[in-house]
Amino acid sequence: MTLTPAELGHHLLLGENVRIGADVTFGANVVVYDDTVIGDGCFIQDNVVLGKVPSLSPTSTARRGELPGLVLGAGCVVSTGAVIYRGTTLGAGCILGDYAGVRERCRLGDQVVVGRSSVVENDTTIGEGTKIQTNVYITAYMTIEDRCFIAPCVQTTNDNFMGRTEKRHQLIKGATIRRGARIGGGVVLCPGIEIGAEAFIAAGAVVTKDAPAGKVLLGVPARVVRDVYEDELLENQ
Image (tube, rainbow, N blue to C red; front, side, top):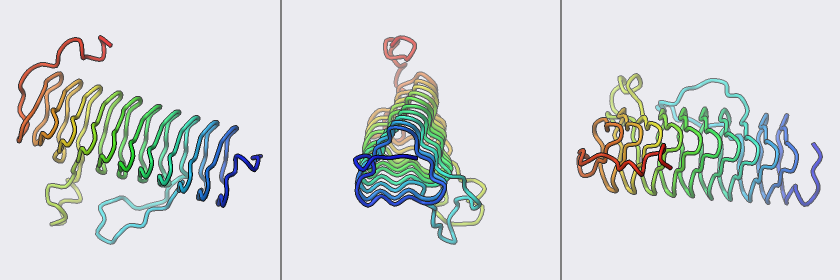
């Protein structure tokens, strides 16, 4: 690991066994915890924290156990104030906006975007090319497939019991969003539902049941109103 003063930034703190690729640039006040791997050409901006260890409350439903080091693929951009936890992997070319957060045991595919102040909770998988806009909450135990679009202020949930009863621990599950689905601004997704491939959820909808593939849904609760237009499907882009 050989870095020039310009690439190091001011007040860079590196833990043990950190591996840094070629042409990596750090901003000021960056903290990189033990065992983190940073791929070639990454840009780590000011006040970023990489490889943070989770601190769980006694009632947390998150899994315990040892976590491997954080891995950032080549060409990732981690913007000012973002925090990424240990045990997570980001594919090549991912971008995290200012103050975004990604928790432990997440897997982000290549070229995923997580917008400013958005949060991806633990044990979530996001497919390549998916775009998550500003102020989105992605709950724990979600699956989001390739090339989905999630508009600003979308809220997702995973606990129908909202913290009550012990059986919630076995039943907690976030939504599954299939390939190419689009979720409009301010949508709420209830626990355990599936949004079908290429579905379109209109702004402000509350989705309480599975959304069929290739359909447009709107309203509270959300209902099917028509098919997605052919010229909007991924295969026609």
